[in-house]
Image (cartoon, rainbow, N blue to C red; front, top):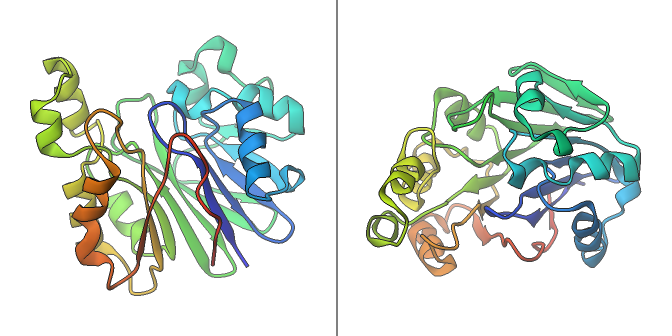
Length: 252
């Protein structure tokens, strides 16, 4: 059995839970430790199972709660050395464990496969978490799909996939020009249409559920994101994540 849950997903904080009967890992800890534990409790998830948190990059919405979480639960925080150096000093975990992009990290019975992605950070990574032949991907903050993303998504049974913005909403919205350019760039975020194309062309036959993740509050709506991916619902389930509350726990 594998339980997965987006505890938070959005520009104000990201945290993804993946656990089995004995162990669990968190991918990113971008909300406070207090909020992580509160949202886990809401969904009946046991924090004592958590053996580590793995950080994708240094932006505060991915690392904000890591330092306190490590102390509270006495767990290691894994991140790259470049990510650690680029993070705000008050967010750097006290006893980091470094990995190199491309490495597989062994935590309990999990293998966490790390790989580089396109984003405007020092050394941004995404992850595929493997357990007893099941694979869960956490693929957010992606300007455009690179070969790494394409190859790993085809292995996934479930995936948290960025569907950040609607292209028309971004174009006509209130963001200043430089920020629109940043979001839509090859090192920014993935649009609804880009996420759809990635799935249409590369999702494996065993993919069971896609969690549309990291939705913009200004340049997207849940309704638009779901409508864009509606053509794929005959192949697999499509669910939304939220920046304000945890998703229901999905069991693989």
